[in-house]
Length: 114
Image 1 (cartoon, rainbow, N blue to C red):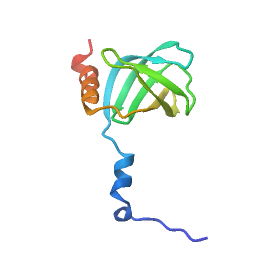
Image 2: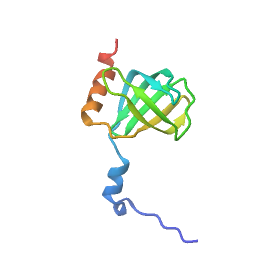
Image 3: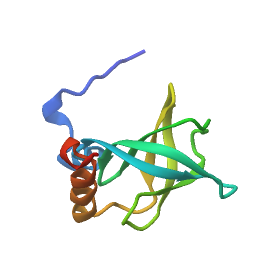
Image 4: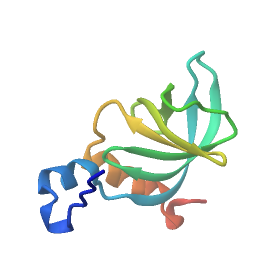
């Protein structure tokens, strides 16, 4: 069996850009909207233009479609990309705008939390 490992300089910049997004740590209350329409209290702990890191007492399944309601913003819909110890990654069905990310970061910074 032949094995081939690419060095970092061989990786296409387009591939790198496709997989990366600036992630911001936040602590922001939200509501997780289940497929049955239940509203579960949740905390957004990270945000990027590709999705959210969410903490909730709700057992999610990878690949499941759920919604996320953040006060003052439209509802976001996406798919569970990963799940581990009560947290999961919600990959957005549509890209989250930079303006929305900045707004979420401002809402979720320690100075904005009361």
